Length: 203
Image 1 (tube, rainbow, N blue to C red):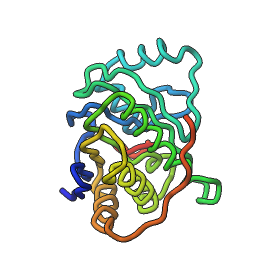
Image 2: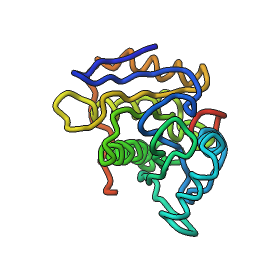
Image 3: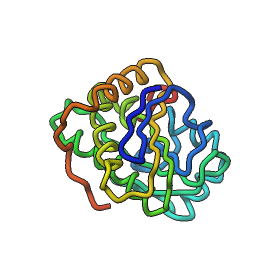
């Protein structure tokens, strides 16, 4: 189980079912309409029960919309978590239409919500790396670089542990390889905005 210590904080990559791993907050790879879909989105709604969709309707009405690169929060229903953070990543269009910045923004928005909630632990999927078509190596790089920067020693955050949970061996291998090379110096990915589909992976 690859992990990286960042002061008193830990970043991990594991293989498993994200709906079964306890955490304060679980990140869902949602779509802009916040309607339950396939992959990890469908798995989270099935495992969490109708309470998640009901809370989406209560908080965000009908019809709902969340911009690409942003995220919204609901209760977690029957999941082993307190909150679900529904993040909308970009659809891959070749990499020259702001996809890295939008993907980084989706992760940053999720982490900002988690901090606002006081979450100490968070589980995350490979946002956009399923039917949204984001290539796994590039998606892993953006994901791990963004979350690593948020957990870096000296950065104010409530989080003590962030865990990327990959359902498939392919996704786990890509994220594990990226984490193992995380000691190499990297540039920043994208700019923060204001504000999954292989089964078990993200849109």
